[in-house]
Image (cartoon, rainbow over all chains, first blue to last red; front, side, top):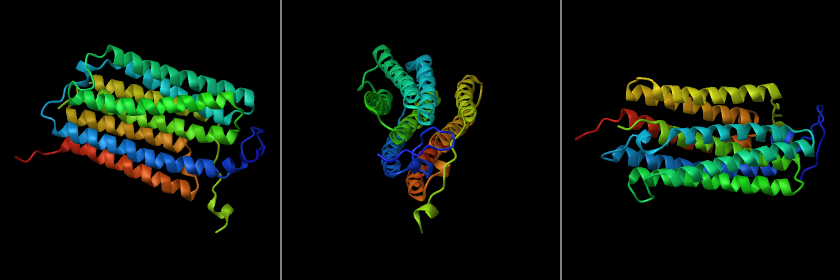
Length: 190
Length: 102
C-alpha cells in the first residue's frame, strides 16, 4: 500500500493517486481494457444475432421497463456514492459511502433477481431470451464481484488508494450497464 | 522521460461538480425514456438513443473515472476500451442502416 500524503484539503489522498494512479490503478485499467473487450465481443455477437434474426420481438412485449429503470438509477447512484467514497476525508466517512455503494449494488442484484423470477421466458426459449440472459447475467456477475469487493473493503482497513482502484472497477461496471439498458430494453424491434 | 514528466496530476472534482454530473446522467437516462415514448422513425429513434448512450458512457469515463487526466499507460488501456466501444457503435449503426442484398 502506498504512503498516504495529506494534500491541501487534508483528505488523505495517496501520493500515487495524485499523480494519476499507482501500480494498482494502472493494473486495474489494464484489467478493465481486457474486460471491455469481453463486453465488446458480447455486444458485437448480440448485434450480429439480432440483425440476422428473421424475427426479433419488441423488448416491451417481453421485458418490464420499470424494474430496469430502477436498477439503472440504483447503479448511477452507486457511482455517485463510490466517487464520494474515494473523496472522503477520513476512514469513517469513507466507510459510510462504501456502505451506501454496497447497499445500492445489492439493490441492483435484487432487481436482477426480481426480473429473472418474473419473466415468462427461459434461457433456451429463443434467441432474444438467450442473449438477454447472457448479457444481463454476465453484467450481474460483475456487479456481484464488485459487491464482494466492496464488502471485503468494509471489513478491512483499506486506504484511499485501494478505494480509488475499486472505484474504477465500479464505474466501469456502471458504464457497461448503459449499453445493455439501451440495446436490450430500449431499442425497438425491426 | 522522468516519472514526473509522464505524470499529469488529475484534478479532483469538487462535490458540487460530482452532484451536477450525477444530475446530468440521470437527465440523459430520463431523456432516453422520453425518446422511447416519442412517435419517431425507427432509425431516428435508434440514432438518438445511440447518441445518448455514447454521451453517458463518455461522461462516466471522463468524469467519474477521470480518464482525461490519466497517465500514458492508462491512456493505452483507454485506447483498447475505445476500440471495443467503437466496434460496438459501428455495429449498432450498421444494424440501423444495413441494406439487405438478396
